[in-house]
Image (cartoon, rainbow, N blue to C red; front, top):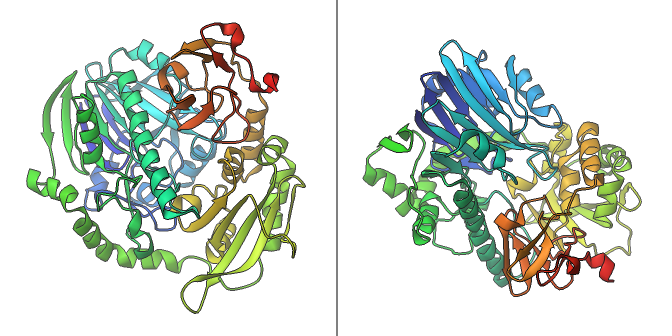
Length: 539
């Protein structure tokens, strides 16, 4: 089996039974904020796109690139389709001309039969509202000799089916770097921002190491990040000056982290690198440049990014020219028309948010600084969208966004502000209290289909009856957030439990979630299961 990196989470997997192109992404994503690092624009995309199978893990724009799919990928390729709760991914691919779909079932082994032979695959589909825009997934492929697990940026909570069906995994590709806006867009003191960034950076890598230990593959390929930020106003986000608080560490940083923790088998791949595997053996690794040139990308990263920024400046300018103008009429009524019907369908989510949220809409000021010209309030308790009252000065949660960006997502009928505005980092935000998962779920689900699924998901009762003992504390086995197995992802320190899957925390003396509203943990001291009670029962 030959595995070729095509950048970010993208791979071309070539076997005697056929080739699979995974997550090809080239064009800038999220309002021209994200670019693949290192550069992959010079690859032969026509050759890569002449594949037998196409796998797109989910609809995030750094995985789903409509332009590269439209222009370069064979429309007769069979699409390996994850088992998602809503059909948005299939519809988007059909709109680009793809017409052959192999529909998988979550965590079920399937056989792809084509004119060149057979491949066994499994797609692990994540279907919680927090996963992608209603869905994320990972792909397992074996040609009978070599088995690879392309986890990209998915965070599966249960890998037992994969282990049972495929046994030993030879190659594991996974994310280790940031794909989030926290903490850099928050209004907080710089010292606090650096402290939170340092913590976030380490938790990301700890989570990845937990998966690596759990999967136990012979070889590990860091992938799905980091993005490269080339716009002048976003350049500070690049990890190119040794800042330990930066949440976007690169492949070399993570490989060093693995070595520091005694883990061997890490492989550095850049776009165009090919690795030939036979079972557990890496027979050949070929970079598209000399070792010295590859090393220079990372040792002289700031210069590399500067060169890329100059080359891509026309691309960024052209992208910005397509955005709607910031100036113009007020946006209260268009936002009311979008949000109020969704609010009326989402009692679980609106109640989970629990308070009004402010949208401060700005236009460029004469000095270049943005000026707030309109404040629209999403009043979730009342299920209404309204102007801010004259005496309404403080909100527990709010966003400051350029009005042109908001006009653009309204014009384009974008169903997911997380996958457009928020991941762009082209906004500011503040909050009083913890992260509100319900709020960001709402912004991901701006269609009738999505909001119905998400609200129903939150309304379901999840089984938390299994009990474990961890470091002298008794607690439910499944994380109250997204049901991760705490025997694998739970870490206890100073009376607090951290689930390393997403970094959520709980106070073990009370069971109270320290990260978000709700999500109480059933827990208690000692090994006696009867001492583990819900915090609500204690009060």
